[in-house]
Image: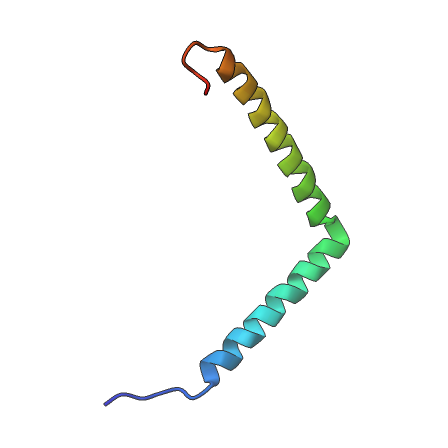
Length: 63
């Protein structure tokens, strides 16, 4: 016999997502996570641009 949940899982996921969003807002207000992620992304991009420029100098290493 199969038992079906009617809407309970949806409400639980909605509450969980609201809690996660609230936690992200609190963390963002205190530690500015978005700025940190943007800065880290820029550093990673610069690092890979540096590596790509040097790989092109290797014979057969670039396009």
